Amino acid sequence: MLFKQKISVSDYCRTRLDLLFSSEQAELWLQLKRSFSDNAIVTVNDDLYLTHLRAVHIELLSMVVTKKYMPDLDIVMQMSDFIETYLDNHNELEIKSLLRLYSRALASPMDGILSMVQSMMDYICQNQCKQETVFAFRELCYGVVQSIRADFKEVKLVK
View 1 (cartoon, rainbow, N blue to C red):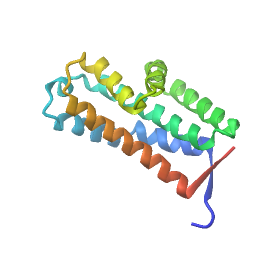
View 2 (cartoon, rainbow, N blue to C red):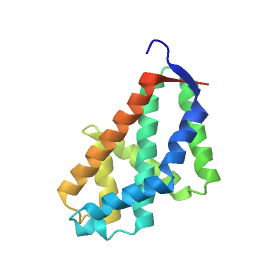
View 3 (cartoon, rainbow, N blue to C red):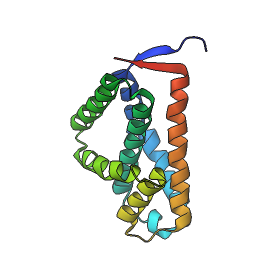
């Protein structure tokens, strides 16, 4: 594509977050949860599971946008402000508090995404889930990163 479509930071984030909080996405994630042969994840409360997955996905979105647009601090700050306002408006205070936890895990000097997933699994499964489950969620997260990166082959965020 010769010219990328320009889209505002708020429109891009709203589209991503609306999808993240959609009933269709929730159902896909619940189907995934039920598909595991790991009782530790299967028995996790659905709301707890969805809350943590949403927080992880928001942290991944923040990471990719920040890496892509770091020289332009205005875009990074607009994204951060939009996410905070969106979560406030949707009364998602728990997710806001989880973002700090997952941000620290993502900053791991090793595989930050694996560290973040391990933190999520430790929290929601009380250190009981199988390692194969952790790796499956790690792959899911890498898929999310690739999806967001693919967006930037077609769109450019603007203020």
